[in-house]
Length: 158
Image (tube, rainbow, N blue to C red; front, side):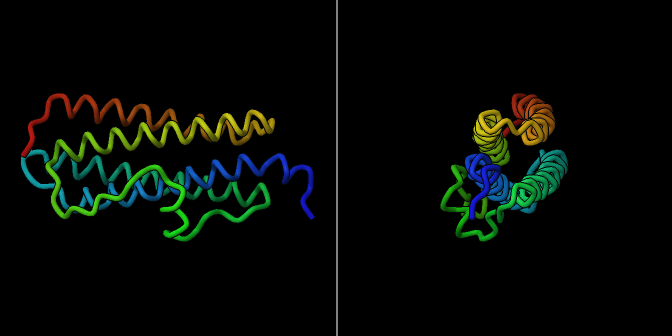
């Protein structure tokens, strides 16, 4: 039997599961780039990509725990995640460093849009806790994307 609270939470959970999916695929892409970046920007990009995927891993856990708090099960299979994410995998074994940078910036913009949908659904459900959680996360992402955009503007492609 679905409670009134669960009925109100359903759109929030749907968008949180999309956020989990987007963040998981992006984290894996960051891991791929972290492992495979080469050239003159190796140290900076290797460190930055590593930091970003660790940040995403923490946030994915937070999103999934919120889904559980709302009485639902978070998306937990890669197949399920790939069905709902707007972020695509990058199967190429080698990608130019500045192209990696550009792709990650674009993917974080996609994730930001996904998180905005969570906030919209949470506001409609009067779920202030989820809104606050997402606000804290997006502030961290905004700062990191500013760093990455600034770096990419001055970088050279290897």
